[in-house]
Amino acid sequence: ECHFQLDANIEFISERCILLVEFVFDLNDKNTFEIFYNKLNNNLMEQKVFTWKQGEERLECTIDSTMNNFLYKKFYPIETDRELQKAYDDFDPTEKSSILQWKNKINEVAGIDPDICGVRLMINSSHDIENYMIVDNCNFFDIHDGFEKCSDKHSIYNSNTNNDYICTNELEVNNIVRNFKNYLLFLYMINGYNISLQIWSTTIKKESDELITNLDSNNEVFWEDLRLKVEEWQLHFGSQNATRSRALSLVHATDLLHFNSFNEQTGNQWLDVLDRKQKLMEHFVDEIKYSLKNLSTPGYAHGEQALQKTSETTNERILFLSFLAMSIPMLGAILSPDITIKIKIVSALILLSLPILYFTTTKISKRRLKRKDGIRNYKRQKEHIEQFISYNKDNIKEIEMNDNLVDDVKKESIGFEKSMLHFNQKYLDKLNKKIK
Image (cartoon, rainbow, N blue to C red; front, top):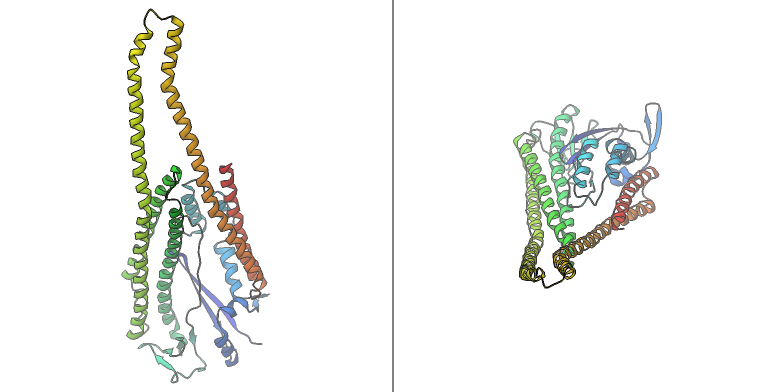
């Protein structure tokens, strides 16, 4: 049994919706320190149940569950917040403007501005434990054995074996931690952009695979929807790229990446890591632009073919009108005094009904065809939603069967997945109504 104190400091950065969480473990004896230093990893955070004293109250839960409680009940309370639930309930996948309304509502209610990556509505998250920053007041470590000084101003040392940082002066730790947080902040920004780009890449691949199987489709609603959809995607991506460029420019214009608490060698190593990641991310951005441009080509090519068919239809109508013009002499014959009035009336009605019958039949035929094409398009959307529903159900089963997760973490994770399943089922019901 060991005793320690845990404080959590959370910083929220609006760009990429980053939560920078600093867990501060206060360990007073060497035995407790060695246990935590050797075992502190994701498994300890997620699986080990501790007994906590919080004021007069005693709680039994994992460290990770305290963060889940904050995320799902305060930061993004999808299970309890009526306005947030309404934003999902009001989403209608058959309305083209609905996704933008959903994005704006989420931003208004939760303060989160999610990227629209094609048709993906999911808000993704990623987390990991980075390096440890250890304040060694009790001289548990021999700084002369396996450590290298990495600051000209402060008593900060870097481990040669696991890249952890040791500070031997508690009074200096705030300046050091601020520099380290700034490094992580920019690293998380790049990682956040990469998550968005990966979703874009997955969406474009899925759309391309589906397009390949429908290249010979005569469904005009499909082609019109494709053209408008890709144009909308390009605008969304352009907007995200403008926001991304502005944010990166603002960071580089400040002293955020001036790691003055560390020596030049350490600062340059961090800058090299960030520079490589930013260049790879920018290359990824160019690839997505290129892919979106290629994705638009079949739609434009089909549009030109449709325009040619429209021209041919116009020519047919001109010929039909020419036929009517040739029927004018027939009108003269009808007006002849040698023909009875009944025959004249019947002949005139037949002659006048020809264009009306032609245009009415054409209009009804196009309307029926458009409705059938629309239903086929809704069925395509239905398949996508059914895949999301299957994904949610599989996640729930996987969490339920995971014996490594404690009950409170299971309950919170399953509750979130069930909320997503509930909303996806509502989307599916709306599509089914349209299909009927």
